[in-house]
Length: 105
Image (cartoon, rainbow, N blue to C red; front, top):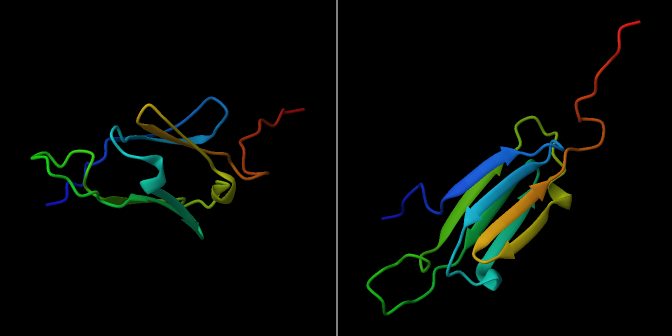
């Protein structure tokens, strides 16, 4: 059975208003991980790997889709890194959608 909480994921905004998606993928090879953008959604998936071990941790496939409901993130230009089992995707806001302060005269 697939667990909806797998893999452990954190989604947050940083101080520059970038959307950050971090996934704990220890044991995965980055060549098995796929990140696809279509319209206002980003999908992260990995194919499962055959294993002779009893545990399926870091061996099962998964797919998670995140939707930019406000359509204000530049998904097509997202940057992804994979270091020490941590996948990190940084998505900048589209030009003109960043919050600005208006001074009252």
